[in-house]
View (cartoon, rainbow, N blue to C red):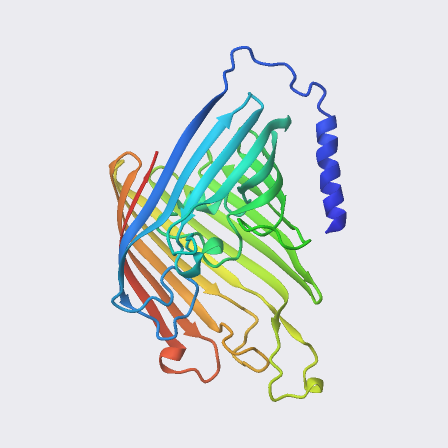
Length: 387
């Protein structure tokens, strides 16, 4: 990782020094300007059924049956400013509530905001490539599945929902696009701590390559990342993701799958066992998931229908034998389904009744009853707007 760090910085320096005109020539017609933006979505929800074991980390995991709530799940207030034809800035304040401890609240439990984006972009630092420094969107989400899925107000994408990759990070990035934005790439070298302050020496490298075919209707993206989080023992997290989608104004169909390897992620439980009976102190974990989604326009500019199915396994390595695993270790596969209607009474205003289901199926040997299989079922009316 150190070798990559030096190579990455050297590449950026060479790119800067290779610019022969440093864009010193100014456009006399250019006038600096900015634009405000705002987004909000929330729901009224009612929980029809609750998993007896409160499994999962989803929006309504642990919420009891018959619970209802008016909930504001996201509020964004942003400002983008064009300093010059070359330099632009992006600022975004956010309040988010993903359920449980993920809500942005202060010590009194009242809603608060945090800084999600604060970055400067050097456009065309070399032909068709931009350099971005600061808090920014990661390659896992920026121009990929979240944009194609198009219903973040309904649910996070597969990787975001299951905390496989973060949507933002602080670092330095290169982004490039070619052939009228039919092909491109993103590389981000950052803290790997999302919106939180950095607390260790380790850094995360993430990147993707993407392509669009058939008049940009077919979208393909390959994403990968690598992040060391500990030296003793060596703990590395690496992810691979593939997105395939077909998108037109009338219909969107897509599938997204990922595999992740977490080395030495599980500390082995030695209770009742002599040290010599266990050859390793830790075990590797391999989360796996696949998501299929679709949306279709029923009435032009007025009514859409959408549906999505996710399969998520928190550890594909776990074979049902709990020997050596710590108490409370997640052993259940998750099947997630969401479906609903999207009514647009006015541009950028969406009213979306939807049905939300997560089924849990334990892989543990000997599991029975609700321990073996149970679910969370939620009905919601979601409202979203942006300006």
